[in-house]
Image 1 (cartoon, rainbow, N blue to C red):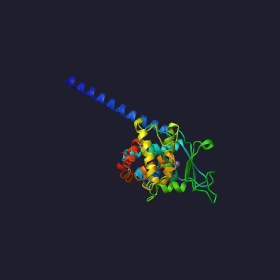
Image 2 (cartoon, helix red, strand yellow):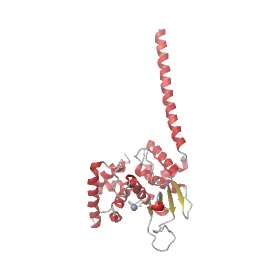
Image 3 (cartoon, rainbow, N blue to C red):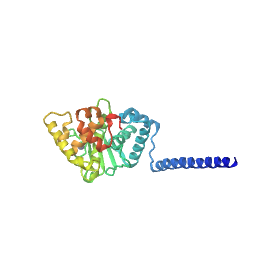
Image 4 (tube, helix red, strand yellow):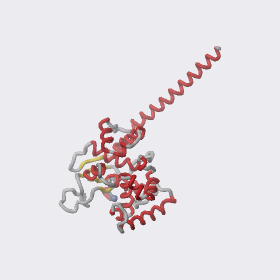
Length: 271
Ligand SMILES: [Zn+2]
């Protein structure tokens, strides 16, 4: 009897120790992540995400927290500055969401090829001027040469990309897809780090086939995609994330390939 009682006490004590170890390890991990992240989203900012970012709204509760973590991490890593405007919370959250959506399923991803995002009020020209009367037709770009590490975005285009009834275009997301494409060292429309080796040739063939359809007026994909392979990849990625159901119905093979690249299937609610 005494022996049974002592065994019970021993088992209960061990259980208590195991539970204490699990809880303290969870708290340590949470604390450690917080220590690494300085930006902590406020409830007001989370409400802005819910109101303006459809992708976030459709996530499960756990994935929403994961998304918020990634937003915080991005805002820690990348400075967002206004040129001729004051950057507000919603601007920051929209830029960060554009960055996070395509890499949402990549563990431990950080954009190594961008340190600053410059927000311009509207379109700009090739000399990065936004006040000229003519020739301002650029809505977003990733800098090269002395502009390396910089991204420029039109705030109007940024907001339009997340507004209702905006179609299949999202300029900011397009620019971040160029950075993902560039992760293997070449912005060439072939994201080698994210496509299985046996899919690369079929992907290139698929791009050329679709370019032919666009050129002959048999595709609903934005004709800007025919500029080159890099633009094709960025343009179809916008469509993939902005109108996933429509994209899957009209372009099932392209959809399957992009699901592999981004490791997600947004038509099914980001699974
Ligand atoms: Zn582009």
